[in-house]
Image 1 (cartoon, rainbow, N blue to C red):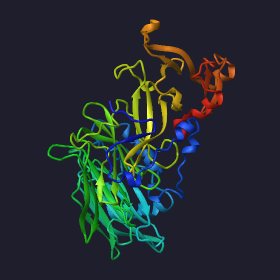
Image 2 (cartoon, helix red, strand yellow; image 1 turned 90 degrees about the vertical axis):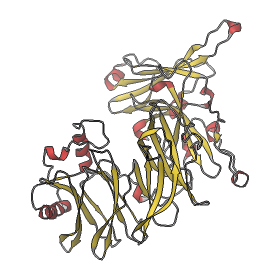
Image 3 (spheres, rainbow, N blue to C red; image 1 turned 30 degrees about the vertical axis):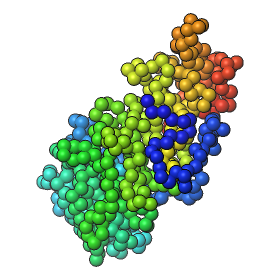
Image 4 (cartoon, rainbow, N blue to C red; image 1 turned 90 degrees about the horizontal axis):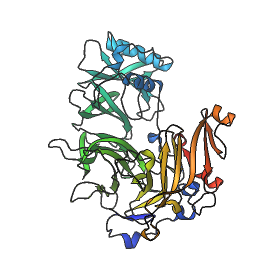
Amino acid sequence: MFQYAPNQISLLKCAKCNKHGKEAPDMINKHPLDIRMLKSRTSGEYRRKFALRRALPALLTAFFLIFSTGCSTFSGFSAEGTMRPPRPTGEKSAIYSVLETVAAGAFTLKYPTSGDYRSAIITEDLDGDNQQEAMAFYQKADEAAIIRVVFMRKAGDAWQSLGDFTNTATQVDKVAFGDVNGDGDQEVIIGWGSAQTGSTSLCVYSIEKGKMKELNLDQSYSQMAVMDFDGDGFDEIFTANVALGEQPALSSLFRIRSGAIEIMGTAKMDKTVTRYINMQVGLLNETQYGIVLDGARSNAGYVTEVVYWNQENKKLETPLLDENHQSVSFTVRTNNILSRDVNGDRIIELPIATILPGFTAQTAGETSYVTDWMRYDALSNTLERVMSTVTNGTDEYWFLIPDMWKGAITTEYEAETRSMTFYRWEEEDPQKNQKAGKGKPLLQIRVFTQKQWSAGKDTQGYFELVDNNNLVYAARNLSPQDDLSMSDSDVRNSFRLVKQE
């Protein structure tokens, strides 16, 4: 089993270590119960393009997808065709009127199925003139095998078409924006999906002399992102593909120059991943941008991969990958907890899950794991531990584990009472004729309804942690004199609702 120090994992021998090496932060040991000490030292707001943008049509899309069938990433079910969506209001109403003219007949709106932009009608300033351009995805009633996108610009009080393009896709998978050709204007990057083949393709749309131009990149992807990887002020397109037939598991970084694709770099990925279930784009540490991907493996496990652009050697790096086996072992786990910014410092943390004592992979439930949340440091080529938690996804909270509990406790969850109990773990001691197993109960966290809490039903000894959405999360110390016992204040500081993160 891969072993690591409490706060730092050395992944590979780095030739730069002596020059750039640094001791791992010891914050978690000094302040195990105060995650505020782990806030990022970076300043400024996160780049505008990474902010999540949601609109009402996203909710409509989610509603429609409930009724889709099959296991394909791209469902062949046409949700939009079941009913005509409400006519847009405001500015989008004028755009809709142009769309009616362009379509010249009956049509349905098509909604992107993933990414930050989920509306069938999207507005964005593409050329930096402080005026919004617009695009709309639709399908004509007599073109079942074709999806169209029309681009528009406002001239005076009226919207005019900049171009109407077709694609033999059945889904709009993803929409992104970025200056990928270095002309100073934003391009539209659209990922198209096919329900029949499960494949994807990429097209880039740019404004040239007042008209939109389409460039088909002939690139497939399992995941796609657009950001400035190399810090040159322009954006690049990142793709990650799982192994499929003759296609290797590969990540690629490329841009558009002189109307053609310029491949900047490629890197091998974990060949055992069959699909990516999560992608986080942003800071890996205070200065390094990159991508973190969570993938489902062919053996039913999960793994997390890191990809970033190495500015020194001008290469795309996948530092966690074992080149000999073309797989990642450090972040393998059986539970599907996903990477995220767990503590609000704008840095992406990676989960490393370990089964608590007394459980096996076959017997462990969600609360039977402790998750070490790690950040990757490209300079020292290490994973650094930020915090450790036990997650209760059913009741939607996390509990921060102090260092004194690592390897010393286990848990038990009772669904009927919605209670999670932490126990001291007793190691086997033949001299005392003691078998390994649960020892003293230390702490219990329980979820009450507001009615139960107000009535005082079974609440004796509990103190309130959070009152949220007609539920009261409460805790009680079961062995206050035990040397592993936490104070009420420490318990409160260690409790976090998942939705608050």
